[in-house]
Picture 1 (cartoon, each protein chain N blue to C red):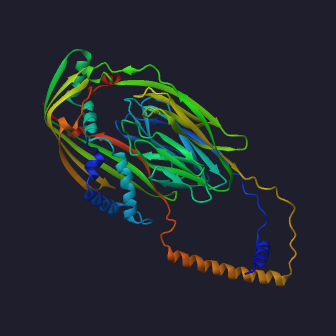
Picture 2 (spheres, rainbow over the protein chains, first blue to last red):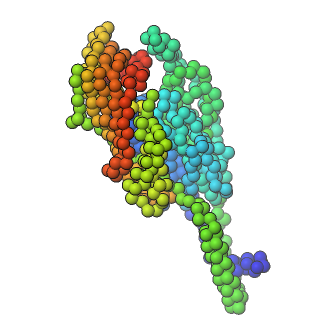
Picture 3 (cartoon, rainbow over the protein chains, first blue to last red):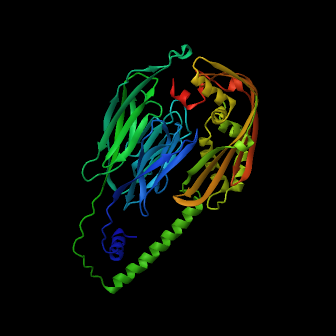
Length: 338
Length: 182
């Protein structure tokens, strides 16, 4: 078919120019009270509102004994999984960055790195781990080349990326955070005389430029070691991405972390111009409509043919979201004989 | 050190049996049952990455002659108590609820239960400054079960020599006060 004719048909049949609603973000937060459930992972979740999609999220811990084992997107929500190692309840606030006016795609991988589909750029990402380990669960979680997400650490099991299309640019803003070790606390027992823990803390905030949308942030260790479960905040606070560490580890080396924030800029729609007058005679319109029908029929046949050839293509993603859990000791069946 | 995941799914045959059992118990039609079963089991396995002796220690902290001894030795520094346990037994249950979502759309909610029947026999242990500092002898029997939607799909049983399975290091805190002190 002649390209010029196709263009004419498309021009004749195109609806009036519409301005797409501008993409917007809203940060929604909630506070979760983690109960004192020994060893149990507790899921905390914050939802977007209908019509919104989660593109980023994070948490700020309010208890030193809280251990984060996962932070990831789950459809229109952000989930943070924690273990409370304290004997009393402790709180954390968690946030989700919700996008409206554009629909993102979430992809995941078990290799520690995931790349967005062709043509899409990364807006956020997260991870799940296999749970608690003595060395921590996650060390790094950060955007990779604007095209994907990377997460690594002692127990990282799955990495997620939230990908968007239609953005003019995705820019990663970075800053370097340094945290020196404080005075160590060493165990007094002779058997563990070499066991010392060095405390350290630090924080870094990042923001995007005017006209950009901050969706998520991450961190990558450049040198040293983040203390196990020492990330006390990786969160959107107001217009800033906040990353903070607080904890003790068996490493006295200076710690350097590259903190990043993901900033989106959507293409601005051109202002609607005066309505274009199309003056076409009836034979041209009739011919165009006939050709359009033929085109649609050919397209339908092609799609059916492709579906028959590749039945497993583009399988939708199955997510398993932990929504609740509890542990119980059955004292009714307790027995003890000395 | 054996984790609950290893106890339940350690052998390839166990995993295959669990997939078949979970697939038959899952109320989903939108995805192949085996695909959903593998995804659920992978998630469950991730939540079971803790040692079988961790559960025993939590039980001891909650209720045992060892916890009583821990409180006494913490109140009287310098004292050591040796405890002989002929039998110590208590069941522990762990219930998890999952939402299954396909491309963001909720399909169903699934309840998974893991049960551990813990039984320790012929144990001698020492407690000092609120901590368990040594373990001598002791046979640790663990019977583990996995159920989905209330339907049993897997059962395993194993016996451990507690002295080898449990590393006390500089002492395992058995009370809150002992946990706070280094």
